Image (cartoon, rainbow, N blue to C red; front, side):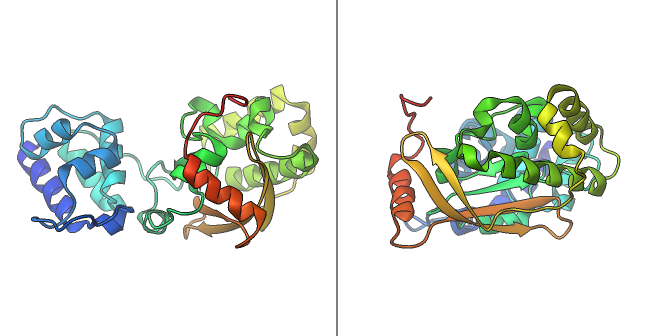
Length: 281
């Protein structure tokens, strides 16, 4: 771990970022350029004291998970991410098409979406990040672990995963999920996790086996869909998808027709936030 170089790199990267670059309000006039230490700490899920010690060359070696969080919070490119891993004494992750490192270009767009639900997914339907309104609408989709991180896997193994869609749309969603999974399996090359998802679903779900046998392929998202909120009921939304160049990640933005009852429900969500609804949770 190169403490001096690490401290210098973190400080210089922090100073190049403005609040608007990461979706934060500018706030009062700032004495120093860039983000404050406490803002970077909040973006990466660590304490301000811990982050400050890293910049002061006296912090402990961060874990690989913490380094990945720093790379994401500081909006690093892949080259910068690899450099950060080496400075902290870790091997840089192997570069593959499917990565936990969120595309900085998608994050820049995502950071500006404060008034409508938005989330970034991998091609295996792992939710990598979601904003406050997406959590209020769908719950915390980033909290799952293992194969259950994939929304496709949960769709066929966890009945709770279907509560966000009206029952009349379940068969259609099953076809979309399986078509997307088949496209991801072939596009990503040999990937043990993707293969394990298919193997487990074939073993555990008769519905999956039936739909998989149809051999439909495609990265498709409905232009419009109906979602079900436990307290607000059905909400009709338009869905815009923005893919990275290699199609490995996608930013989904959910909006409603202005002035509609659905738009009013999304506005109410912005007031309610992430409140736990007693009748549904």
